Length: 384
Ligand code: COA
Image 1 (tube, rainbow, N blue to C red):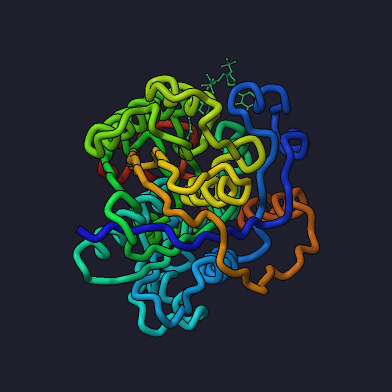
Image 2 (image 1 turned 30 degrees about the horizontal axis):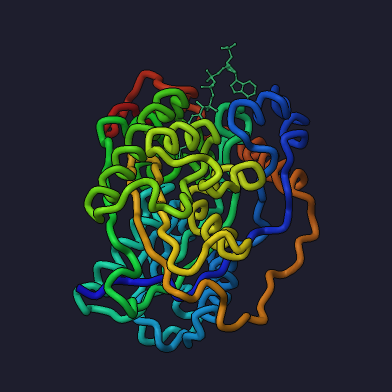
């Protein structure tokens, strides 16, 4: 079987920083509560579209692999904040990159979208359908975040990273094992209402979102799913926790990561963390942390990497991957985002004001979990 190896990587983080103190200017919260309960100190707010973040990250990843966009066979856009449902966002990225020969698909499994995309592309490399792929993990969550709900507004941020996948040179290299799962009986405990076709004909404007979010239940199920998946891939690849050089987990909450590491039998000094500075970037979290680990020199040649994650659905997964000898870029790309003229707090206050001006067209939506329903959605709650 041909394994898929990561041969290129690049990230693109929006520059505007929103601190816990910024959040406390409009929410009943404080830095101490957020830091203690989640480990998060700040997060990024984007001033550009996800496809623009993706373009920069993709160019950097392609340069790192010294691969021309025209040689790509597939572009995967992993995100739950795609710009359009039709056409998909991957096709826009394919066009912008000039990846003319590539197929293009969006993958949405919420926070696990990058890793589910990685599995899809790696599977196609294994069967010989494609030889190379660009897999992007990107989230521009700020436009549809429920900014006046302190239970969710403090947790999330925007970001993007991309990897290039190509056939591995050796058998014991590349993606060694992956496990995908979903607790669909819990899909109602993390739901962004007002975002999707169910709501389209009910006079609810895009962006008028309310989040159903049962933090404690998500916490428990996240620890369970990530731990189960991590144990599964280690057993199937015939590796022990002690063989793992670095864990690059989904980063929604520092305490979740600590539980998962403990259950996996891997000390925290072998876990790469970004949660303090970026919060939960959904699909972008794992690839951004992976790129930063490589940039920091924390990934030795032939490193064995474990990447467990979970997201709405509730989807969960883990990937066990061995790097090759090369853990440094072959080249760099000369590409930057346009400058950001506003502060993160200004942008967030604009988003809040816009929602206020429109009036709550989602007025029938009552937060938090779980209001009486008029239209029942599969898995539980509904919308007026
Ligand atoms: N600032 C200050 N206080 C807050 C707050 C905030 N941002 N959010 C909630 N509180 C309050 C609650 O109202 C509650 O007050 P009460 O005791 O007076 O009722 C108290 O803090 C404790 O709330 P609780 O929900 O029990 O806190 P917690 O320890 O479970 O932490 C989360 C909440 C959301 C941080 C935690 O459950 C979590 O991280 N869950 C996982 C969610 C997640 O990762 N989702 C992403 C999926 S990809």
